[in-house]
Image 1: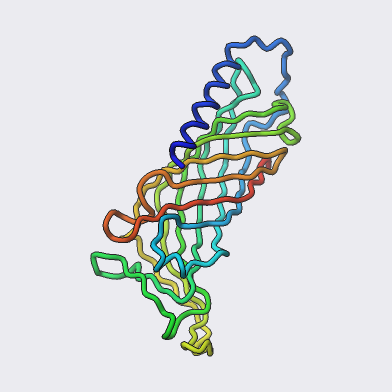
Image 2 (image 1 turned 180 degrees about the vertical axis):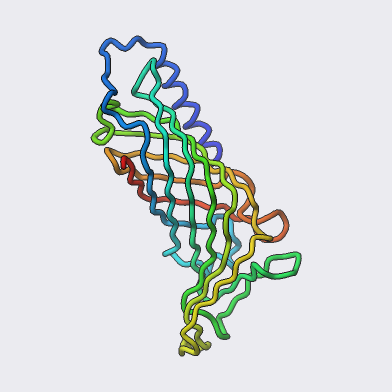
Length: 241
């Protein structure tokens, strides 16, 4: 994944450098182009590299949501390309089936406990929120009208952990009978890495694009406290507000 992203970034950078060296014969009017906007993302999330004992308990409906305020600065030498940067919040919700994660534990290792034959929550998730600074290198086929243009972007984002918590809803017995209709929320950050670096890519038309985000630096968790896990987000972006 890292090699693929670096190769894409190298190719994209080469195109930018080549394009900058080419004289633009037709002047492009960018007077009506917005220089800032919100970028809203909804994703399907997955933790990669988990052992089978944990991966078998993860659900396919894990999801995330990101929102960023971005400033877009076209290159004067070639307005088809621009650099964008901003700030925002990235959230992720990994849903587990018949398993608990003791993020508030006092043991050296983070405990993932299978609950196949005992009481457990009907819905259970591990949730994180990061404050992030994204930077993108962008291409627009129609730079004067980005809301109707093909677009492509590669970038990175640096984040710091804002919150981590588990959430369980509706306690059930081993046979699936409801014991108590309550919600349990436990917050703790001690097992989680406080920083992360992610690679991003987007491709689309107009205000909608498909995006991917991959956790480059280390694991979601601190070294030697849990199995290495990297966050992969794939989803849809709406931008242009």
